[in-house]
Structures are given as C-alpha cells and as structure tokens.
Length: 631
Image 1: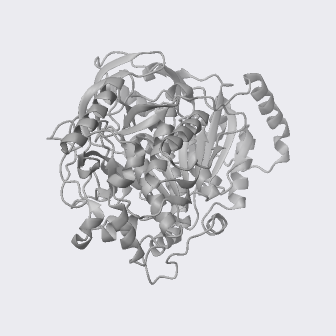
Image 2: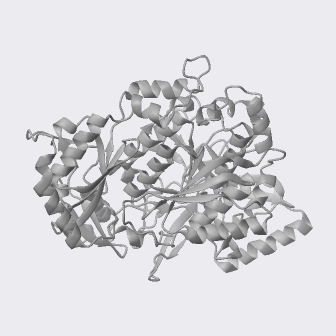
Image 3: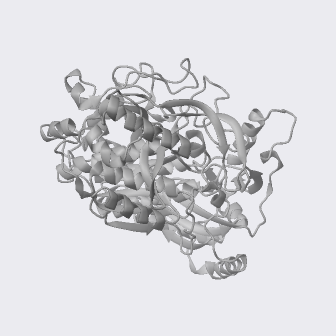
C-alpha cells in the first residue's frame, strides 16, 4: 500500500508565505556582496544528482498501455520562478581511501585501529568536509539567492531555502511539475551542476524531485484476518501443532531464545520516523503497561528546517510497530529517540539519518523505510546516505534497515497508485535502498512457525500477489496485483564489501542482501496497540528490522555497549558450520512472483533471508567468548 505520507511530499518543508520568502530572497540579493562568493569561471561540473524527469518520462512511457498516449510526466510544465524549493547539498568526505582502510581495520584484530571507535569530532577532523569547504558552498548558495542556510553539525549536509529560479542559477537545472498518483510532484530536467571550484566538494544536491519518496514497509491486516490469526493461536495452544499466528511483541524474546540475556535497559535506540509522534508515545505507554514493562524514556528530535510542519499522523502504524517491537524484543531500552522528519522526501529522511549520527547517542538506529535503489541512486540520495552510514560505522553505531515488502520488485510499480511490487517483468530484479548500503545491517523477512508459543521454524516470507486496494486518504482504489514478500537480491550500484567475499553467490560482484532475517509475515505478525487498543496485527519487514534492533540492544547492554557494526563478524563467523546453533537457517522459499522467479533460500547465506534469524542467548554467549566479535 502506498504510504499516506506521500500526500505531504508535494507541500515540501515550507510554512512561510510565498511573499515572505520572496522578500527574504530580495534581501539576500541586496546583501550578497557582503559575502565572498565562488567565482563563476564559466566552467561547471556535474554532481551525482542526475536528471530525474527524463527517467520518469521514460519509465512512464515504457509502462503505458497505449504507447502513443500521453503520460503525466510528458505533460510536465515549468515551475513558476518564485515557487519555493528546499535543497540539501551533500558534501563529499575527505581522505576516503584512508577512511575505507580505517573502517576495515576497525574490526580487524592486530591492526592499530582495532576497536577504536571515533567521536563525531574526531571523524569530522579527519574525514569530514572542512570549514573552508563548507564556507565555499555557503557562499555559492548565497550568491545564487538561497536563504535560511543551515550547516549540519558534522558538516556533511548544507540545507537552504530557495525557489525554482535560484535552483536554476545555483545548479543549472530547471524544475517541472506534473500530477502523479493524485499528487502534485516536480522533478529536475537536467543533472545538477556546480562551478568547477566546488566539483571536489559537492557530492549531490537533494530535494530537486519529490516524485519518488520513502515508503514504509508494513501491512496492517484487515480486522477479519487479524481475528482469524488470533483464533488460530488459541487452537494451536490446544493442539500443539506448528502454526503461523500473530504474536505480542513481548513474546519475541521467548521465541528467539533470549534466555537469561539482559534486557536492553542500558542502551539507547533511535527510530527514524516522520510527523507527529505523540500518538505513538501514548500507545507505547499503553503497551508497556499492558505487558508489565517499565515505562520507556522517550524523546523526539525534529530534524526539519525551522517552521516545518509535523502534524502528519498517517505513519502512526509504522512508528507504533517500530517502538513496540523494539521495546518488546529488548525487554526495555535505556531511551528511545525518535528522529522525526517533517515529510517522506528522500532529502528529509537523509537529514534524519545524519542527525542521529551527528548526535551519536543511539547505538542502534531502526529504519523501516526505503525506496527503489535506482531512484535513490539517480537523485544522489544513495551517495549521501553512504557518507552518513560510514560515519556511523566509524563511531560504533549500527543501522538496522528493512529490505522492503515488494520481493524482488522494488522498482516495478503500479501505473495507478505507484505502489511497488508489481512484477511486470517477472525475471527483472532489484533491491531497496538504504538496505543496499554495505554500511548497514539489512534485515529481511520470514514467515514464523511456532508450536505452543515456542520457536518451530521459518520460511521465506512470501504472501503472493494481492490487489493493492485503497492507496490514499481520498479512498482511491487500485486493483493492480502486487507482491507482498521480503526484499532481497543484489545491488546494481554498491560494490560487494570485503566481508561478503566468498559468501555471496559465485560471480556476484555487488552487495548482496539481506544479512539476516526475522518474522515479517502478516499471518505471524505483531499484535500491537493502536489508539489505545490491541488486536491490530501488522506484518512486513518493518517488523523484522525492529526485532533485530531490539535483539542488538540486548546484546549491546550485555556487553557494556562496547559492540560496533557487526557485519564483518556476521560474515566471518555465521558461515562456519561449527556455529550453526547461533542461527535459524532458512532454507525454503523464494521472493519472486512465483516459485520459478526471484531468489531462493538455501543452506547458509542466501539473497532472501541472509543467514536467517538469531538465537539470542547462544549468540550472547558466543560474543562473550569471542574477543573480536563486533569489536
């Protein structure tokens, strides 16, 4: 189902009137001479932000039933020159070869850097953009007419308010508007450019399109299905037969064998979210009270620009699923920090990632969001995200990211609603970003079978093709069939990290995902509290990711929060037959449109469920006895 948050995307970040913004821009132009500006020598260079509109137009034409018919993007018109636009400029990291070596040595025993996590200040000093670089970017933005310029604490991102005219001046691309999926959207007509003096500084320019936006990865079961799974649970307790049935999130520690592993009470966890989080915090209080858990210490960090609107509550189910699943699985955490974006634009979500990393408070950060990897690569988001995630790894933080609910078809979408998972080409596969980043833990989904409440087995989560259904707040319906299944496969753009060498399929040279997997099926989903009431069953990889976040919080608390990014250790130790008891290997199922398509599960790592799910207590014991695990 297409996220209802998408209706907000076209509104952007701005709450000020067009008149007030225009006056600000006039003032900026009058006072611009007070600032040093990058000289315009006439030579401009391309950034990693490609021309997005032509790609949308080509995709729409390819998907159109009538090859001669007009498509929405083909009828795009120029934005008015004074139309407000909020941009976020991602700056390149410095000394990247040295940084890549450091990140490898950080988890390699015997090296000088082993286990020596950096502070944000240390990272900025060695690898972040310099103050001089930032000043040059700020000067260019001011010269181009942008106002309200804000530099992130780690200097990786510089945001600013402008108009279609200032975008044309500052980045040499026009912006065109059209209607899609009931939204007013826009996209850049050309690749974003900067003066050659900034070519080594600016990586990408975000915010130049809002056609593709982040999607949540969950499915709320209709009440009839939720009631059926509850009835099955009662029957299963009596008959003691393995079944797929819903679970209170507080049951996951028992199912995945937490045993005597301490709760996550000494660990801070972050959740990337959007809009108004107050209803979610209220429901979290009800959830903890219902389950005899301690009240969770929560805080909300709003990551958008001054004056941004955070009134949206359409993502409440997602943030409830994240917070209750993390709390239930962990048994309670030291603090939950919601990093709240004002909307679901890629640029806004990247800013939230960056805030969590700049703060360096959360040891694990949950992300139950994603988008078509080709889209995020094209608009420069993927490159910006990787820079942020590299800093997280250097600081010992772990991002837990869901792989998506569209199976192997994250980029094949409905021409009516834009929902992913529509396998027009059943043998063409893709993955979701940011799960495809080598600097995060990508979490896939399983269908979980329990026997009288105890773990029995798991298979690849794949519910087959279903109508998309109602896809927006206006009640519009899409009868197109889409796949509900775990994301997984191989990146088209990210090179395989060294830790995957010898593990992913022979001949594959790009990042394989997921790394691990947990429960995601609707039939075995989480029964969460929504608006004060339980009985709401939710599935999707948006359940799997927070289960891992809760598990990792437990393991962090058990190890004095001394663990770092665990991917290298996962691939070093989970591949060994001697360590089979640490995992529940998933060997059955596929994430394609039928059993003949997609990626198939098998013994060991595979591109549907990674290494499988974790046995918490056994892994905790193993970590205690293995001095280099995630150190």
